[in-house]
Length: 302
Length: 277
Image (cartoon, chains in turn cyan, purple):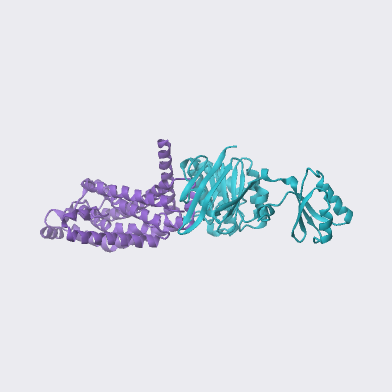
């Protein structure tokens, strides 16, 4: 797969504060990458640099082999910038039409494209409204709609579901999931559950540095089981599971949740053994998942 | 590669300019601008141009003016085919540059403040944005000038008993010259609106900067009188030279504002390119 984003030793300072420190990573075509990190980690700054809104102080960055902001990327790279708002003087449809025209569409094609993208985010009936007449969630969805105009190959989404109600957040997740077959995404969010569902690659930023970079291929799913019990983890449960052949370690990070690390070469049917152990003792479980959650992967080892 | 890039820049500039025209005619803010212009010109036409035209058109006043100022210079104002057009010429040359600073101050600031420029910068170059907004403001001002000129021509036609070809010709000369005079001021506001996120601040900066520049140049010239010619390079200084001229001879002063516009627009593009959106 070809590389679509390449960052090398990226640095960005605001005054005396260094926001990005020697950041290097690559994103391949077809990737759906999550950008995670605490507030102030540099996620939005990285998005700004990738979109061409801000220049890095040092290092290099290229998207499809071009510098961010280059005319070769117009229509190819789309984004949902954080806190960007529409012009209050025009309706949403008028502005999306205009964006379509800037992307090289004919007036008629731009209008059709506007209808299409507004329907994608369930805003077709709000097309003639001005931004001020829409709710926060609707404005967010309209902003997401503008990122889908035309046929972008890479879409950068900064907090796409922040401020959306659960139903609309689910719709946006489903939309991203549906489109991710043909489009690469980079998504910044604090919602780890959401990123886990959507992304095959995770970039974890902390204080401007890339602390972790994991991909689906790194996920040694066969070596971990995450077990959620209906009852609290008692010493009795832990002791029984510890006896199972092949177990390497057993972590109890939450009251009803256990993470079992095992060696599949020693016991290939470890999951069955766990279920049998639970059944034999009459302990009920809520779910058993192969692998670790993204949250565990990112934060448990720290 | 250069030609497709150039073509795209031109297309985008045209789209931005067209969008600004729609803003004038189809939005509430645009209608307010049109109303404000209509009100200002109503008062100018009703209480300045109309009474002054009657006075200027009288032979006695023209003779007195020639006796005082000679047959050259300002007396050339009588060469315009209608007194209304002569007064419109003087008033607009003196007033419009100041109005222009206010009318064109919001080329980029609001979009910078709202973040709307982030949507635009993903689809077009910052060069296209600056050129498009500038071209849009020039079109808007062109519309406003044509409307006010149409009102002035109506007044002249009513007094003279009809519209003549020389009057229309003079109106064309006036509109082209006014656009040339306003171009550097509009380009100046392109730069200031790329610099700050509020149109009020952009206007204040423009007034303070022009004032400071004039004061510094005057102080410099006081000690080095050989550099008096520098004052002639300030935006709008050709206005005083234009006042006594009429017809297409006015275009002899067109080069300076065009160069000033080019330089100021280049600065505006540089400022926006360096600006974090």
